[in-house]
Amino acid sequence: MTHFTLTQSYAALPERFYAPASLTPVSSPSLIKLNTPLAQTLGLDPVWLAGAEGINMLAGHTMPEGVTPIALAYAGHQFGHFVPQLGDGRAMLLGNVTDTSGHVREIQLKGAGRTAFSRRGDGRAALGPVLREYVVSEAMAALGVPTTRALAAVRTGERVYRETPLPGAVLARVAASHIRVGTFQFFAAREDHAGLRLLADYAIARHYPQAAQSAMPYLAFLESVITAQAQLVAKWMNLGFIHGVMNTDNMAISGETLDYGPCAFMEHYDPSTVFSFIDERGRYAYANQPSMALWDLTRLAEALLPLLAEEETVAIELAQNALNQFEAQFQTAYLAGMRAKIGLTHPLAEDGALVQTLLTTMHKNRLDFTQTFRTLSQTEVMQPRPELAEHTQAVGTQLPASHRVVSALAEWLPVWRHRLAQEGAVTPAARAAAMQAVNPLYIPRNHLVEDMISKAITQEDDSAFETLLAVTTNPYQEQTGRAQYARPAQPHEVVEHTFCGT
Image 1 (spheres, rainbow, N blue to C red):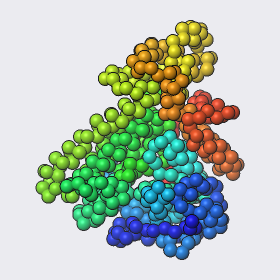
Image 2: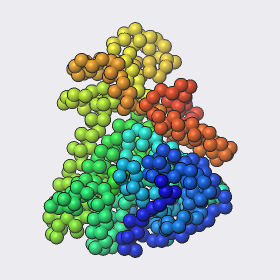
Image 3: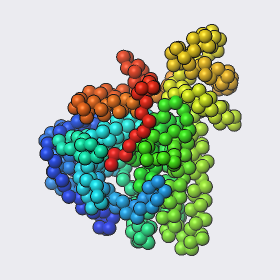
Image 4: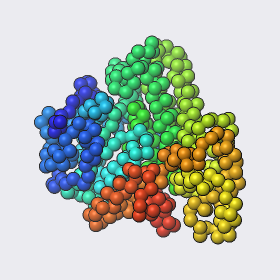
């Protein structure tokens, strides 16, 4: 095992694809957390990474010999408005490694200082957004969602200035790549067809090598990205996750969840839920995420038109036919996920209506999304319990959460139980185990994340971060003494808005 050996395949592309990134030394870098299992998977030496040289590198303070950071160029639509040049304004790509499974993974520092794309920004990150992304991205990985990963979080020992002075930090992020829809838009906006083709060839080789075998490789590439995004957004919806800022520069063509700025997990079910403070019109509300993914993919298709066919009308028809596949692919993946959440394994035509009725009832009664599905995973809820329903009606909202869920779903539960009976000979215990394997007990609830951040900033106490990370990266197994991590926010704990890390 080597200490830190990287290749830099992206830097082999022409210089207009990126800009060299100069280091900005910091005063006193210190390690908050190293993701040791991930480091080992990447073939890196955790002992070296946790030592002085490793911490200096993770903070962007100094680099080992042979590591030359770069900042990637890209464009993007931000809340529907096109910006022809964005780029890595506060991130730098160190290079890539091949992990123990043979997959290429990139390592990037986020918050390590100014780059050629920083514009008026300082290129830094505050501690709060770094801890948020670390916890939420690792929780998403544990939940089985394709995502970037957190390799390490480091304090810089310096302040960054936002509304108030805040402690600075750097996140070391790992991704299949950092190529975005906006990367393709960057070259398309410049009518740089040669650059567009180079980028597409690079992305195909990295992510979708099967597309290279197609008679129309660029169309096959577009279709592959569409499929990956349809499946990704379905997973978000199945978990009540709201990305918050689905701009085209935040959509990775690898199909991984990229950027955890104003993200959150929905508590009481409401399809119009928005967390991002700047999303005043609800563009990226929970229910809009599938249509926004398709909107972003349409921008990718537009960028790829010169590669799809010589005649524009033919290219447009090919792109539209590919985009038309998204809705069915999303619905198939989404409904498969929802069937699993309510214990169904043999699809029937009426399952979609059964799920929708459940969601409508959850919305009407303001039931917690995660808690409701976990409650349905209990064997006693799968069986008719008249005495429980009577007791629930008598006591009302003072009952435990599971009883309140059963009371609110009183009309839906018999229909669901009848549907379960059509599944054949499955024991309640086996069904409960299968459902609990897809319905988490613990998610990074907003009030827990904010409390963790507050303690880290005001008290320099990372214990809440460590505990929340430990709980949410083991989301399906009940953990003794940690019931408070499974409950929704109390009225005084509710966090209405989240903010971008910039």
